[in-house]
Length: 426
Image: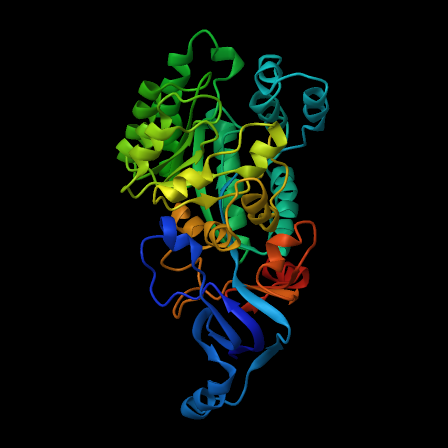
């Protein structure tokens, strides 16, 4: 039975065409239909418009039976797309949080066996079933915040068996949950301790063992490399990306978080879907990104948590780039998947307008995931993945009330998501 959301105070994020992305000045525009309705049928958005026209639509289509949501006083948004997360992990790392507060840097913690290597150790000791159950809790959490599409990376395995374990968990989540999921192989997240003096051997394992195994089981859509100071060089990154491309894995990159070591340029060279982090990005990198299909994706939660410089979002937007934002949900540098908070941080910390921040967590974020043809906006024929807010005075109230949960209902593929529904799906 079709779903009708009626009396919507403001239907935001309406786009009549997909386009490639919202670039530069285009990010400052969000189309909102006041006093609106929306109809979803068979999991997709079939129609929307002004309430004054609803009776004509119903009479024309001879439709009488609907599941109805009365959204009086509420806004309806496209659900968030989160294009950079590490949700599948074991345990937590709050001790490192305390260590940083006592003065240790992220690099110092990593050298002491913390950071990514700490998570790799915990994941190795966790069974695949327990890892799945831990990850399911986080998936349910981000859905409750309003996320309807998410990219999930591996990268806490750092050996073939554990990387495959992570990717199998992502695949199982993909099969059992109604939100849209993209899977990314990130074996090049760090060099394991046992290969510290022979990193070439580990890179060989990534290229000759991990990538073919991932491809054989069809476990990933994308390949990522942490191309930054102290992690993987540009030359190493290019070799790994080329190996992935041979197996149909499209590139994404971690870049310019710790230093400016050429990761952005490598991403553009290999037509990466996105280059992510960018806290240290400079004018040269911004110029390099201009006019390309690579989406600069900012992670303000990670910058906030680690005390890093804020990425220059204003410079990027003013240069005409299509900026996206993501949560970077992970145990070490951004233990939150709250995309509403990310939207607020975009406004408060990165000096984006509410409209720019909105586009960065919806349509441009979908572009950074490679799913903008089906997600990220209110468009006829796209997936009916939507947020119905609580009553709000205006569109601007959503990022303004940065600490408030303003999501009343989450709709995924035309169905109102509830934990009970999820139990039935599983």
